[in-house]
Length: 483
Ligand code: BG6
Image 1 (cartoon, rainbow, N blue to C red):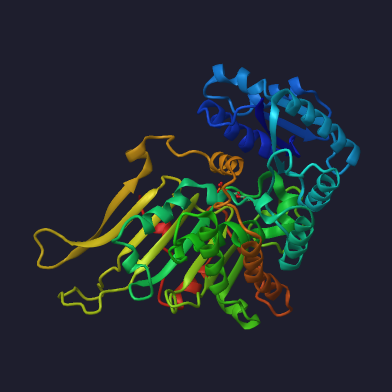
Image 2 (cartoon, rainbow, N blue to C red):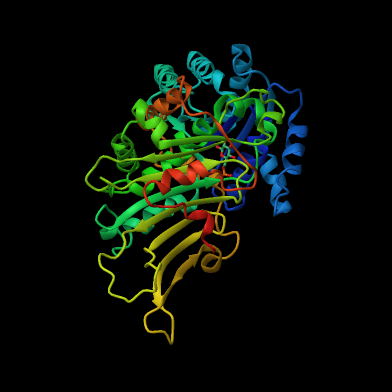
């Protein structure tokens, strides 16, 4: 008797399966980390057989180790069908039971919803009705892709519908930013070193900047993106989770719920936007040319860039602004957290007129060129007391070699297979994050709200985003840090 573990991907003919999920599973296979008795079943409406599905998958990731592919591919099946059709699910059940009978032990299943979001609830309800998430024969888990809802009300409804069928511990809401090695390293950096955490508060930190900038536009996703925009696509999920990792209190243990409690607690402490804050503390803009993208409305007001000023109401962060920005078609692909420390309280050096001492910064580069940079002042040799900023840095590639960092999906899939939800978003956290962005989205809808501005592709956005910080005597740093 041996156990079987099946991953069933609904919506398997989409990009995500070939670009992310299968390469991640194949990499786990090569590392010997997939469970014994593993099967992958792709289900989608396209008409093809398993052999064609395997051939398509092999062509996309260009496996680094082609010798390992046949063994992996032999565990891959394809089933044509629509998961919102109970008859198709019955065919899936009989395929899975056949595979599971051959093992004879526990029959574990991980369902991956890579379908359009509007069918998530329907699929889960049908799985429930068919007894396919019943845990008596083995564990049964469901991964749900983003977007999880489009506002607080829809996220709550979705949670409610899911909870009619599934226990919370069966639900894995994915946010691939939490699977990024460098985002997880924020925890190790903060809580496995004793020198930084004592400084990690309002006594020493002036402000924090989180930038998630992309150079690409909406590419082929115009119809989807035009419905969501940058706040729903990036800020509600990825940026909020990065802020939570950087700002949360130390969890008491590495236990999944202890970690998730602290992330949720932090989100609960972020100050809600009142209608009057929206105009003052947010900027939204669209790159020039966006309206001509395929699938985008010619009069679209969907923002492709947003900048926000957040306040966190707790003892640690009172008075420390968190500036967030994210956008498409910007000057560089950069994801960074920059901590700017306070200026020295008194300058004893005879500085030349107009000179000041640059405050220290700690930059955590989440991607690309993953690493950390601590910037501090040194004396320029041979001068009386002139100074310059220098950088103490760490690069993953130098310390661990190129390609040392696994893809986010690899870690996340492995965690779901092992039943570890630490890096998945719990129902309360997802609702808290929606509760924070909803007032912004609503404020932008009000008449009299500042218009959606335009910015030139390939730049760092616009004067208004600079002004958001300039008003506080600060400026964005990610664009001008050389590394
Ligand atoms: C996705 C968004 O969640 O994240 C995309 O839907 C975005 O619009 C992508 O491009 C960015 O992810 P990464 O890992 O490339 O930073």
